[in-house]
Image (tube, rainbow, N blue to C red; front, side):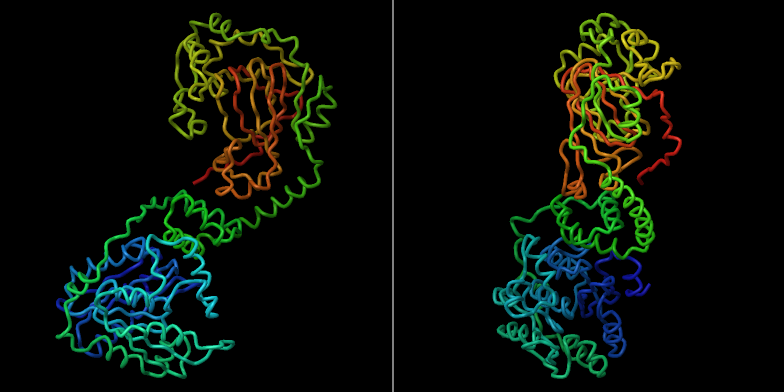
Amino acid sequence: MKTSALAAANPDIGFVVDAPHADAALVIAFGFASWDALNAFDFDGRTLKLAECTGVALNRILVRDTANLWYQHGVSGLGRDADEVAAALRDWIARLRPRSVSTLGQSMGGYAAILFGALLGADRVLAFGPLSYLRSDWARRDGDTRWLPAFDKLQRFPPARLYDDLPALLAATPRLPAIRVVIGSASAPGEAQNLDRLHAQRLAASAAVSVQEFAQAPHAVVQWLIEQGRIDALLRQWLLPDASALPSPAENAARNAGAPPDDARAAPAFTDAWRSWIAENLALGVAADTLLPTLVEHGLHVGEAQRELDKAARSPYLAPARRLAQRVLKREWVLETQRKLRPPQPVIERRHRLPRDMFLREYYSANRPVIITGMMDDWPARNWTPEDLAVRFCAQQVQVQAGRNANARYEIEGAQHRKTLRFGDFMQQVMHGGESNDIYMTANNVGANAQAMAGLWDGIVQIPEYLDASDPANRGFFWIGPAGTITPTHHDLTNNFMAQIMGRKRVRLVDSLQAARIHNSLHVYSDVDLEAIDYARFPAMRAVTVLECDLAPGELLFIPVGWWHHVRSLDISVTVTFVNFVFDNDFSSMYTTYQAV
């Protein structure tokens, strides 16, 4: 496969080695910046043609920075900063043992040709239209705003060692290559001075640099030379002179190689989870530049992060997702409209002994939460204590959720945490184990405990004002655990009553009409922790209203279908939840399961 085809086929390839000849000259060509398409491997065809026309054996290493960060944050496959890239290229030079080493590039690639030519101790450098610095303050001073976004990004996210001033590097390098800078000095519209000449003059302060100027050519001087039929002669003249009197590349590299920076930092590997996060945000229309700071804040390497963002933006797989996202956004607009029209609910109201028709009209049908008091006063369960329960059901074998602290996905993977033990032993952990989320009897255990814990229902009154008690198999679900138990953020597929028998629970709720802003990671679950929202990871949550209440013993909380909620036990707690309303509560049959991949 040709290098150009290889580049188009695989955006992850940062370099290609084409070195079939022994004892041959080596050219390392660096690619230029490309904003609208995947960067090409520059001078691929030209260097092949050079070898064919001259009959001179020529080995090549073609390098590109698809992050467009002037090679300061490395190259995919070679390293994460310029020093690591230089070290990797030195290894290749040592393996290939070339007759001579030349570096080549235009614009951003020209900057890299000079930079790595100096770091590698190359013999010759040919740089077309290179910059001399990467500093945004200098660029604004000189009116060179052509690549300011890249410079600003480098200032905000600097590598361990930032090579942002080539004349300073050249002045500090013991043995320099012969460097030819080729520029076009035709003035661009609106330029007070020719910017390429400005950079060339700064570079020419080094005795190793010679400048060749074409007065009719623009910044894209290579294309102009191609159109004039002059590029091949210039490449042949500069890249293939007699190299017999030159020092060996190994000798030059040994002179110029510096120690790695002391503050070099290892960054974690990029994961598919982050790629999925990027794709989802881009599909939803979030600007790629706003995602980069979050990736870097989470320790990811800025160069790799930028390359992943660019690769995702170019991906043909993302285009259909963007179209589907537009359909979703239309539906979310409808939800947002309904939310705006709904009267604001700054707090969850408490209503005493709410009549059925009023509950149906103002809360159940309106999809609004409410706390109802006074409806559990006749429950025998209100007199329960942990000690009484431990004695009454001591010998019963029950199933609970255990070992939850060792698994961040304990709720989603609840089946892995089922444990059978004596109820008395379970209650000893509840009463004396302190605040913990490690052990909890939840709704997931109700089926297994139906017979062993049937006596619990003697203390519960099915509230006839709201509930249908005709089906004994559909009475409700028990939740028993110590302070500190958590049910993470999720929504239910039915309307729910949460009846608090013992202890207190803190409940945080998010209106179902705000679903567009909450991250639905899998089925009915969200990765958003409503106790400690990570706004950097979930920026849309900044606009979400989270309602909070502490549910006391004897209180009944209505959680409407679709409302997201997070629950924490503040004390040793016994709760029962109900879904057997006298009103229609079949919403799950309308639900299409969303499974994240």
